[in-house]
Length: 337
Image (cartoon, rainbow, N blue to C red):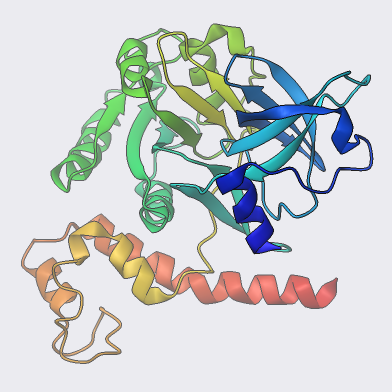
């Protein structure tokens, strides 16, 4: 099956026809991009700008928004299906998140950068930013930190938030501040998105959809209000979709998630995903060092010497402490099914 899949990419030979469309009714093979996936169908944009809904060949094991594909369009379109996805080109990156029921789930492909959106409402927290940074570093996709709703930043909160953002800049992460409501900083983000495929991630209520609307008004995404009682936003997107910017570049609007769970990562990988830890990893006295109270720990020594910021050091341990709890919750849910 895998050999047949590769042969389609190399030689563009037709394979078994999907039941709905006979091979003889299909035209030549074309290059396309997956705009969105719906069960056994996908909306594909061809190189000439056509948007068509296609069946997916049964030998294609994974297909997500952003995939580059080979399609064949029907000579005569039916009421709903206009072609068939024949094969998928290799991905240069994929964005995955662990699912309590389905394991690791790929939600988008060929992403160039991950924009981590935080905000001062419901609340600003470096713990959530660091969890997203770990998830981004694990994928190898460049992360960018965006603080939204700066128009709501009070004078009392400003010094603490500004200090936290500076710490991220000092360890090498780009940081941008915007107000999707007032438009401040929006043009800077537009320039950042040009000629790249980007995805926005962040907790519900941070204003991802509002920011996308400000960047691309024609998207007309739903905007969810933050509950005054709970402070938690409502999920506003359900299916990943690829959106185009007039000035160049694409945006994957991905399903809203409160945070990426990290239970699938071993502690060693989490440590590597804290980029300022990398110079010290492997230099501790003991191979099984927990980087806490262990004698001869190089990371703890670096922290004590002021080479690692306190909130980053503490957030690392919070993530490590949460791994077993998340794995236990997944095991409990699976046993209960």
